[in-house]
Every structure is written in C-alpha cells, then in structure tokens.
Length: 249
Image 1 (spheres, rainbow, N blue to C red):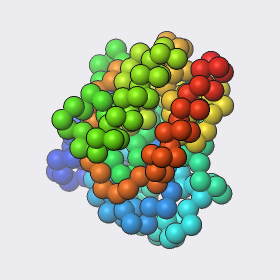
Image 2 (cartoon, rainbow, N blue to C red):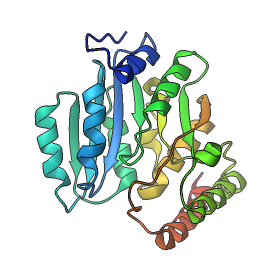
Image 3 (tube, rainbow, N blue to C red):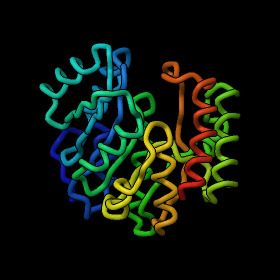
Image 4 (cartoon, one colour):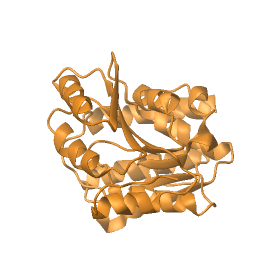
C-alpha cells in the first residue's frame, strides 16, 4: 500500500487515495522528443504533488534541442524522476522501452502535452475495483471536451473505423493515456514488432486479444503545442501501418 506523509495538497491526496492498496509502486511513463518549450512547465507541477510510491520515467528519444539537459537538471532535483535517452526519434520504441524497463505494479502511460491527472485518478480507482486491468483513455468519448481542430477529430474517427474494420478492435482509441496493472501485460510489449506511431495500437490490440480486461473512459484533451508530425505525413503512414498490422496479426 502506498503511504504519504506529504502535506494536504488536494491532488497528492487524490492520487494516493485512488491508488489500490495492493500497489506498492506506480510508474508514469512519458516519451518525449524536442520538448524544451513545455518540459518544465508540464513536469514540475506533477513532480511537486506526487505522493511517495509514485515515480515518473521519461523516455527521451533523439531530441536535438535542450530537452536532455533540462531532464538532467530535473533528475538532479527530484528523486521521483528518472530518465532514459534513446539515440533516434521513435515514439513507439520509447514507449516500448519504458514498458520493458518498468518496475511499478501499476503503469500510467501519458504524453507530456496531456498529463491528464483526473484520468490517472479515475484509472487508478477502476483498477482498484478488481474488474479492470487496463484503462484506455479515449479522445472520441470525450465529446465536446475534445478541443482539437475538426480535421484532427475527423482523422481520429477515420483511423478508429479502420481499426474496427480491419483488426476487429473493440474500442475507439489506442493512442490515449493508459493506466495498467503491469502483471496483466508484462509479456505483451516484447511481442510487439511495430514501432513509431503504430506501437500503441499493436500493444492495445494484442492486449485485447490476450483477454486483458480493458475499459475505455474519456480524457480531457487540450492543444498546448503543435503536433510534432503534420497530419499530411501522419495519416498516410498510419493507413499503411494499419494495413501492415492487419496482415501481421
């Protein structure tokens, strides 16, 4: 059971209270690439309110700006933060590396520009209910709370349709944040062969096919910076990779 002697910060108390009693450690995995503009403003408020037993693992991959230096400074200051650096930009490999190196009983996967604390709390409570092993965040289920541009929403719906039609995915999103019992998925990341943007999709679909109890809930999403890869490049690559994943699985 996670205990905390920290102050009465409401977020700290909410995280601690939401955590299942059987979880000794919660690990938050965050892939980052060239995030000098938002790294400190996003990470520091979370680091300041984490209860004991919570740890953030940042997987930096191929950054060419000051992100690695900023991470080094933060790890010197915060004992609840650790970081790993990979040589090349590869979101999927960064997530896979985080999962393979993870030591927490519960894993939270999130993106630096999201860090939806409310989703984490709801996800932890669902894991504690005993009926769910894997909580998947969904932009589609967010409805009016999804503040992304219409073109991004349309792209998400198109890709979701293809995942359902070609891969039989019983859900609406694979790229949102996740809260997971590590024991439920510990053999799945190593079996995933896709990297880049397709790793999260393969990971979720393999988990579904392995019988992992997955529950989708909406996330609170806001745009705080432009996406690293424009839709004009991302959509064609996603369509190609969904077809490749269909043939592989």
